[in-house]
Length: 116
Image (cartoon, rainbow, N blue to C red; front, top):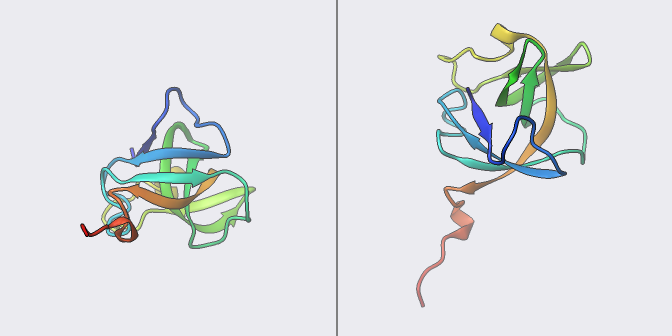
């Protein structure tokens, strides 16, 4: 499993939702334990975007992956870790739920404050 929604239930709801990265499929870009904010809607998904999606063959598996190309009304999604292939190479086309817009844990460097 590549990530899990931070709330209860299956699919996350609302225009902005949080997910927690679980597993190594997005290393080095994301690591196990990273917490992300995801935006539903907004600008169109582009190849190269980090997205949250559901594979049509595995609708129980919510994943964070990189959008590769549009396919059959959905997207081909790949992980950044070449050693892990739990992505479209294994599960086929995915439906994108939203685009990753920020990592909020561990806090980004621009949140580092120095004591005065």
